[in-house]
Image (cartoon, rainbow, N blue to C red):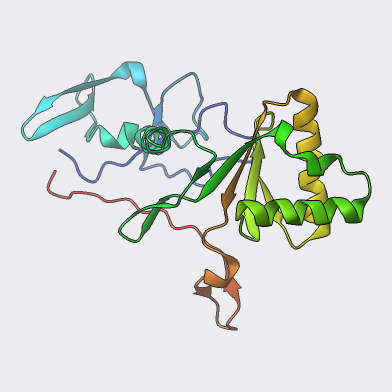
Length: 224
C-alpha cells in the first residue's frame, strides 16, 4: 500500500458558504462522495463510483478500479466516522434535566449540561429589564448554573454564548426563550458549561497575550 498517497474528503455542498477549501495540492487526490466538484483545476478527484474496497493482507484497502491509486479506507471515511462517533457518544447519555460532565481520564467527552422546557422559564416574560435580569440571576443560581454557558433553543440551529453577569447577554437569552415559548411550552432550551473557560486557555504569543485555540490531531499507522 502506498503510504505516500494522500486522499482528502471534499466538503459537501451542504457546508456553509464561508467554509471553503483553503489549499488544494496537485499531489493530493480528492474523494468525491456526492456530486460535489473539485475545488480547482489542479486537484485530482476520486469519485466514489470509481473506487472499490477489498480485503488485503492485514485488513482492508481501497483502490481505483484500474489499480492506479491504492490507500487505506480510513482516508475516505475518517471525517464521517469522526462525526458519527461524536453523535454516538452523545446518544449514550440518557436525556435528563441535568447531566454531569463526562470524562475519559483527562479528556472531556461531554460538558456538564442542563435542559428545560421553555414553558418553565417564566423570567423571560418579566417586562421591566432590571427585574427580568434579577429574575434570570435567581433562576440560574437555583439551578446551579455556572456564570459562563452556551445555550441552544430547539427551534434554532446554533448555540449562543451566555454570561449570567451581563445584562445584555441575559437580555439576548431572554429573547430567545420568549421566541421558544411562543413556538410551544415544550420546546427545549439547553445549556452547557463553557469548558475550557477563558481563565484556562494556555496558548500565548511573544507578548504574553492569551488566545483560544482548537487542536485537531490525526494518527497514522505507517506500518499499515
